Amino acid sequence: MPRRGDRPTADEDDDNVHYVDDDQFHDEPLHNNYENPLPEEQPRRQFKYSTANMREDSKMKKWCCIFMTFVLMLGFMIALSMLMQHYFFSETSDNAPAAPVIDENATFNEEKATINAACARGTYNEDDGQRCQQYCLPQFFECCDPFGEYDAMKNITRNITENADNGGWGANRTMDLTNCSLDKELRGCVSYSRCQAVGEYELHQKSENGNERTVSIEPAPATLSVLCSFENLDKDPVSCESLCEDVACCYSKGPDNCMAESFDICLDYAPCQNLRPERPNILETAPDDLDVQCLWQQPSCTQACRKAECCGNPSSTCLQLDFISCLTYAACTNVTTTSIQLAPQYNQLPKVTEEVVSACGEHKALSELYSKEQMQQHASFKSCTDLCEPAKCCWVNGDANCFFEDPLGCLAWEQECQTLFSEGRRGL
Image 1 (cartoon, rainbow, N blue to C red):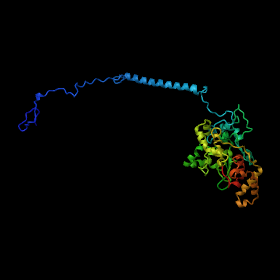
Image 2 (cartoon, helix red, strand yellow):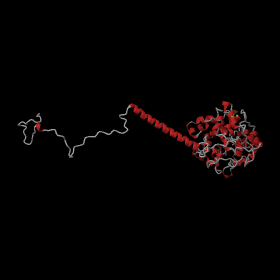
Image 3 (cartoon, rainbow, N blue to C red):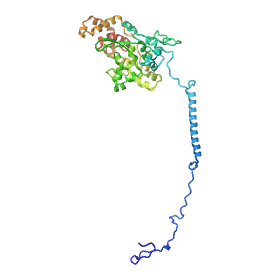
Image 4 (tube, one colour):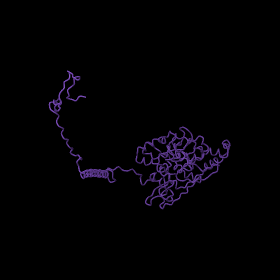
């Protein structure tokens, strides 16, 4: 292969090719098409705050400065927060919002959570019930059992034990319970419903073989409202059913219903009402902390209370169909548009008499032995039917129904007359 600068051979001679000797080549700087050559690249300017050439001890100083700046900013924010707390939110500040509290002189001046903690199953016996008694006595049994007089006629007694030194009310406090009643203290009675633990209640029930048995009722556990909520019943109904088994008479619709005889127990075990077979077409009982939600007027209170608006409607059957469930929303009254109120007992109906208790008690006992046709020929049937006539308005449909005007009176009469009207009974 010829090298550059060699003369071509004869065979390689070409008139169209011109060869130049090596000495004709000179190294000359290349130029672009511009008139002046490119300027030399200037050295880069170092950043003013560059750490490239910083010594190790200088880097430590830098991080110390950053840390100190952070600490100073944090301290400033804390000081500013404390200053705002003092001037705008402290108890001595005129600008501080007043925390809602229950009147300390009220007959029932504790939150439901406080009563539950002292009286619930598992905590009541920790101090032999003393804390529970201090909260509950004497106002709970004086105010919250509208069927005390009726129970006395049926020889139903409460074994109220009192271990508290001050009888349940502070030494420096007094209260007048002369006119205290469930209809006047509904919110407080619902919040204090677990106080029934002090009464050491017993229920008379029928065993599977038909014999009567006595069951001691413990206070409801603190988790009952959660276990018996609609949400949990869809997942685990057994937990709720096992806790409510002994108080099934509180939500049954047959002649074994014990609403009036065991009202305090039924109110304590209110979440068991969610087990009724009509679910979900019934009113779910209120959450346990509804009283606090409504005391603080939280949006959750308004949302929950909307479910129970029908309970305050005289034209609705809601109060009768969901009586105990409606009562659990008592905290909504005067806070939301939902109003849960009860008319005074025997506002429309006469009082239940001993004659009614005797005649209908005999009829109920015989109805367990004879058929319905045989019972209609028995003297006790006519006697009980005639005596229950004044309370018939509690069971009729339409505008003639008087349950809303006298719900507590109707419950007392129903306890005796339910054998007659159980087929037409609209429920609780």
